[in-house]
Length: 192
Image (cartoon, rainbow, N blue to C red):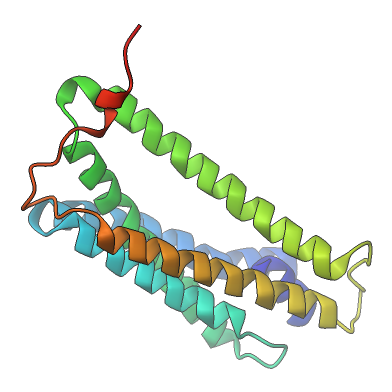
């Protein structure tokens, strides 16, 4: 969605839009090892929840973008998302893996990967549903107006922000790893 915004609204070529969008990925790559180490020292639930809150801020920024939004604000939104994902993923994985016995690591790890993939698929599906609802069979015009495209982008990011805030609530509601002796979650899966 954001690449369409940068190319159609800002008139950037695909390469320049991609270079701008890589800010998020670079922050994720740089900060994930740091947040992983931090989650060994601090409660992973707090770090992961801070990540969800940071992502929500970025998504809310994107839900409010318009054709007049300055480029620095778009980059700021990408930075919030990059920091938020880095704060969430490593501590969340640490919390999950710390709550299972060593013999169940493979099952827990595969469940984490599966859930991550399902989340990505659902996010993409919801985004496509929103785009289809607003855009229908309308092609994105070469030179504008981009009213339907902007509405699609704004609503999609607003929906993702709401889902992120729900995820924040769920993240805060889980048990405290440092206090509780968490029972392994994969014992419900019986081995044949």
